[in-house]
Image 1 (cartoon, one colour):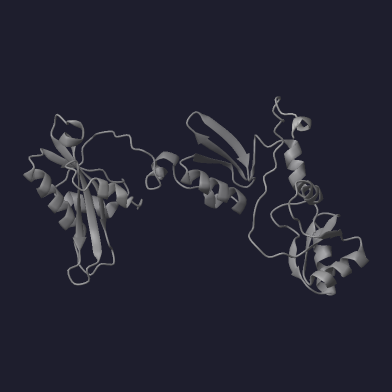
Image 2: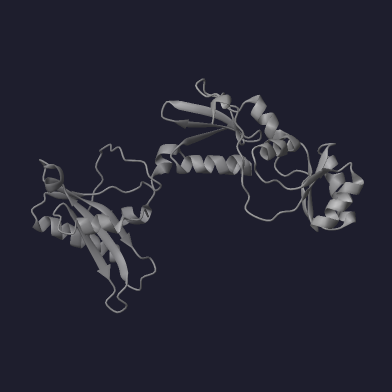
Length: 296
């Protein structure tokens, strides 16, 4: 459920618009359920004098049964005592347990169309069923985050990693972590690890010490001084041909051979443990009003 800011309730503790009832276990003192209702007449001068159940939650692990039913009945009796003509509610179409509860209490379905604000609970109604399982992990991470933000995902070619993201009147086609907005220059910078290293060094970012695998003497010296190294093909993606945690000469030779099966050029770097971060390359043009020489 979406957490409620305690200040929201506290600031409305004397409100006649929003009503909140809380169920408490008399033995343990724990909160085991809550229901929130809205008086429509007081909220927006409803000419039909209605009310609504806004939110119902019950602890599934509580020792007591029918907590949701008791809270719903209590809220309905409360609004009836106020003279409200009815109490309505909305529920997700696939929430079978809640639908069964409300129908058992006498609620009936009405043929109304409602537009809801998109949130983490109902976003699947806006973005369609998940399709990330058909994509590789890189594309899956992006599409899962897009869906979380309410952006619809259409898988165009799962095997090739192509998918379309759409929101409102805009859409963009992507392939794994690349999109139509990714330039050829940016892609080439990311594809070549030697180029990526030089760019980050020039930007003042710390990078692992590296040496070309063709330099046998230098490679062994780096292994001895670092204790552990990483071997990776200069070009490639998704970790293919990358070996980490190498600490012996024989393991180093095997890792270099594996990397060369993906790319003839191979890098050997010191092994550094830490968080896995991603650097995004961009080739946006410098704004016309900006001049590097004019900086002081």
